Length: 302
Ligand code: GLU
Image 1: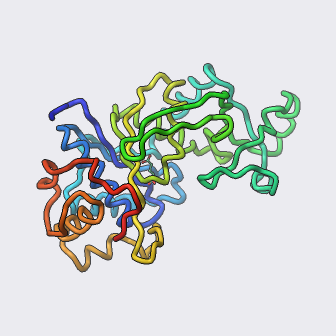
Image 2 (image 1 turned 45 degrees about the horizontal axis):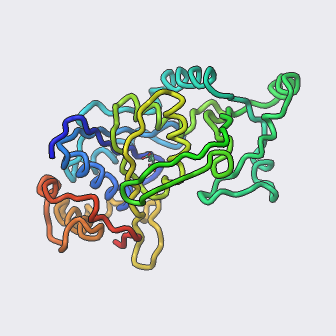
């Protein structure tokens, strides 16, 4: 099937080393778009410039290049997109309630705060209830973050790997942050604005972000942006069942010091279920074989 309107993407955060799970995500996202005759874009999610040195972004792009993944467009760097996020914030202000939040870390992590399954918190709307006067008083001492008030609405979508998903915004997400207190825009806003900007039609990413999707769909709707198709693929674990991390010990770079890119592609494609046996191959040869339905639904062991 050829559909030139398909646009896939890979959007790494260069806050640490790229691990095998990130590499697999990039591979699957690339294969998924290319197998439909689509285009592929790479975006560097370096919103937090302090934690994301430029050199690490270059390492990631080199590693992707080594397995044959390049961007069909220029690379988007989120650190250069603040004006676009500000414009989206202004639009959202006209369409939803956005309010400053002065709560400290300690207040947000107090024992009585409800925890969400993704490790976040269900914000109890403390600052939504502040009077204008209170807000002005607090703003003299504290730089607030910005939160968006979510309605009591359920967002439903079908994930191409995980199936039907449904989340009530009020009880499963809560009023979430659009801009941090240090002025850095939040991932949830940036990802929506940038996927919209690049015309992304499908998002392939790790299952750790499945829980974030309802919030992102809510923002897409408010901003009048289309919702892409979502595919959340299982996280990669080592043989002991431990999820890989962005630490140096799990860096995919180490693999490249021992194995050829073709060996790495073959082993990963086999581990994920894309190939029936682990034989060296290149990414182009996998394009005609690719079927997202073959991706393992359980955790992937590498
Ligand atoms: N930047 C995120 C990460 O590296 C991925 C975001 C996304 O794919 O939506 O985990």
